[in-house]
Image (cartoon, rainbow, N blue to C red):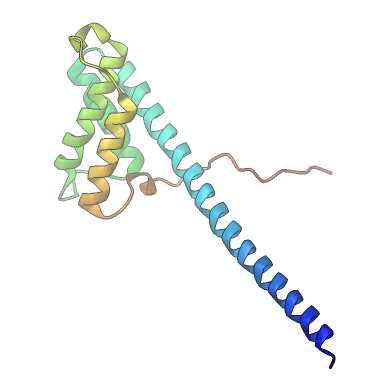
Length: 150
């Protein structure tokens, strides 16, 4: 076979390898973006439920307890679990931030950041249990797959 044909074949094989590498890279990136979207919507669901439960509370203690109970119910944590009280205590800090967000005069000038409190809880939970707290719920999240109706 002539050298120029071998050269063209080599170039074609290089192009095929570059395409395959790009496809693998884009597939991995898309999977990571999809996972980030799913977790973000799960966080929204959790924090929304927490905020609604806290807002329905009559006082700080009952509101905080209601918020923690709502999240424990959503994620399957029950008093049968060995670390239940520990999880409730850590979630209590998040619920308290949600209470303060609704009643900023009680914050005594302390910055209020519910999302940051939840991020701290998630980090603790992941370190303590080796899993994401958001993985405990399986919720439908908005899909980017177009729906076609014929």
